[in-house]
Image (cartoon, rainbow, N blue to C red):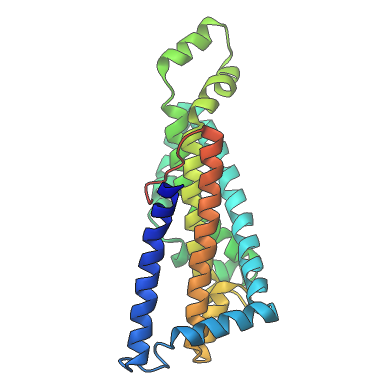
Length: 256
């Protein structure tokens, strides 16, 4: 219990220090209220947006978009990784394309996607798929191709077919890498959707921030930034907890 309290105290102290500095800067007038509104103003706007339902609506819309794009990306990454595992020679036909698009920032595709698909949901879904596919694909391939050779030999001794070896040996062995890849991909999804909503959307958290900036409502811009951070953090921690319970270990993605 004491250990948990100590772990919680450190981040709370850090947050308190940031809020204190923010308050002092606003109080002393080092920056105008237009540039940096005081914490009380931001808090008041946050509560008002919660009460009116404006904030809940944008959170829900962005969340649905993220889950949709993330799910599609996972299915594609899993299927392509499975093909790479069962048919290793197939990688030569598409690996260059995967590596090429891995180095193309998804947001740079927005102008082209708007020309092709308009500013509807398709554009935002494709952006999320492009952002989250590659970390999941690379981790899935790592898990599938890194299976212990001795385990595969045991499967061969029992007369398992290639498909059965994949289901009984490779897939369980790769589970940790798959889940960690999903966790990283989920984080990339949140980053991508906010950028996409700022350019090609009329709803969602990204659009809310852009609209607030256009209306010179810095307090709402800060509310949007804080909400994105909170929603993303909570989603990540829930996913990490699920991984930890499932694997009876750690779902660390290297960022903690």
